[in-house]
Length: 186
Image (cartoon, rainbow, N blue to C red; front, top):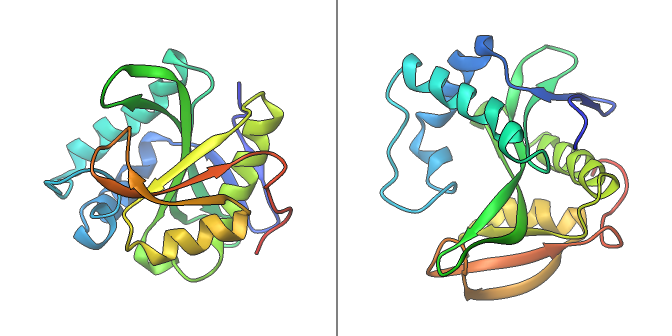
């Protein structure tokens, strides 16, 4: 089980709260954010009710599997939610869940470029390894340069572009193990 709250010098990673729904909507209603998060079609979040449902869904994921964590990335100086960092189960296209997990992140565009993704992902993955995860997959669209840069700063092993066993199609696959993890914020 991962800690509920993880602190870094600039960030507080915490479970999502119902009060975060407006910021979730402002983030996940943007095509420039959601185009990197899942398979097409990319459908922007339509309204505050959908954001509230998303918050509730991620709040319950750990009840189903305590090795998962979806955390709001809160900036200590402002209290703003910059985005999300996660450790989540991966379901294979052929074969379902076979014990694999991924780490990922997304930020609101107004929070990009400050190193928050690297700092948050580094802290959450370190906590995941301390809680018993032996490796975490990172999968992304081949042209997702910003996320590739974060994964490299974390120390992930770049496996290149390959057939993606979880999302299908060709993805850039990386693998992060405890010995890879670069300590401290970038």
